[in-house]
Length: 339
Image 1 (tube, one colour):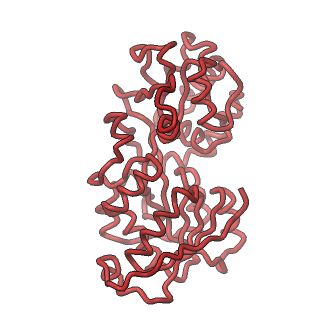
Image 2 (cartoon, rainbow, N blue to C red; image 1 turned 135 degrees about the horizontal axis):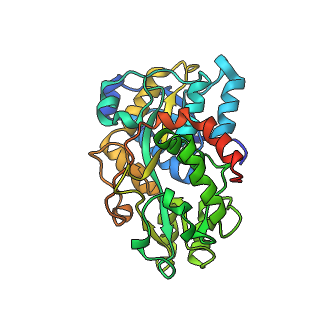
Image 3 (spheres, helix red, strand yellow; image 1 turned 135 degrees about the vertical axis):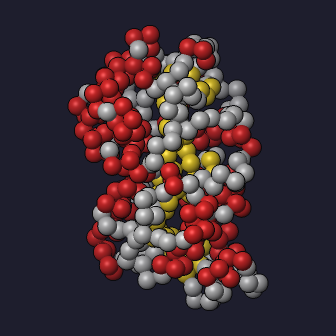
C-alpha cells in the first residue's frame, strides 16, 4: 500500500467542548498530523469525530506500520508528524526502541487505560484490543476437543491445522508471548508441532485462512477475532466458530491498536489531547464498533456483534513484554521452518 496523505475536513464546532476545555479552547489554526497504519475506512470516522468535538483538524498519512516507522526514522527531527497510530504491540515497541516516541504524562490516560496495555512510561498506549484465538469447522471438530494453543501441536491435529504466515506481526507477537510465558524450549516444541500438523501452506492473511476452515480444507486455525466478525457479517451461515483459547490457564492472547506521541512533534500537548480523548467512553465505544475490536477502557461499551462472542479471560501479561521478545520470536519461527 503506497503512502497516502489525507485530511479530515469536518467543519469545526463553535461550542467549547469538554475536550477543548481540558487543554484550552482550540484555535482555528490548530491541527495534528498523524501517521497511521489503520485502514482508512476504519480510522477516518475516528479522526472526524475528534475534529468535531475538539475543533482540531487532523491530516493523516496512511501506510503499513513498518513503512511509517522507517519514514519517521528518515525524517528525524524534521518530521511533520505528531502522532503514530499502528496495529500490534510489535510495531509500537519497534517505534519506541527506535527512539521515535515521547513519554506521555496524563492522569486521565492512566486512569482510563489499564497498565497492561501501556508502555512502562506511556511512550505508547493501547486504544483498542484484538484477541487472537482458535477457530474451527463445527462439521469437523467439537468444541470439547479444543483447549489451548499448545494443544494444536498434538498429533491428533496432524493434517488439520491452518496458520497465517510467520512474516505477519500478529503471529510474531503471539509467539513472543509464548516465549515470555513458557520460555524458548517449550515454544520451539510447540511451533515444530504446528508445522508438522499443517494441512496447507501458510496463508498470507487471516481471512482466506478462515475461509479455508469453512471449506473443510483444514479443521482448525488461529486468527484475530475481528476478521471473523467481518466475515460472518456478510456470511452468517459460514462453517466457522470461535473458541476462546486457554481459558483454564493463562488466557487468550490479546494485542492492541495503539498510538504514541512522537518525539519530533512540536504539538505534544495537542497530540496527548487526542490520546486522552480516544481513551474516553464514547470514543472507545466508536473504536469498538468500527472495527469489531474490544475497548481498552474497561468501563466502555462493547459493540453488539462481538458481545455475541461471549466473555473470555485474556492473558494478563503486560504487552510490552511481547515487544521485548519480538526478535527472539522471529528467529525461533525461522529456525523451526515456520514460513
